[in-house]
Amino acid sequence: MADKLDDDSLQALKVAFSYMPKAIDVNSYEYGDRVETVLAHIESVREILLHNDVDPDEVYDDVNEDIAPNSSY
Image (cartoon, rainbow, N blue to C red):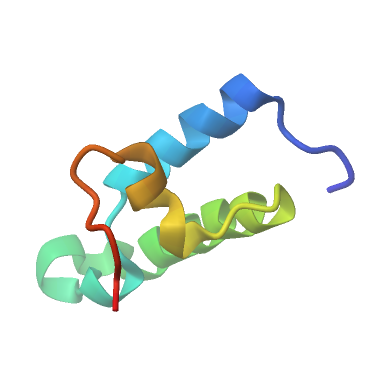
């Protein structure tokens, strides 16, 4: 995983990630037998974001600046 994404691809990944469920919200009631697969997908996207110097925990606020709180504290 040597190459980093171009700006447009990275922005598209950030938008897609902001709509993904949080890992803590993935459960067998909603996802059935796919829980492990969904968690693996979430983790793979998080890894790509981290590789591209993007904090996955800040993506939602970055993509949705107009509705993001001013501070998380």
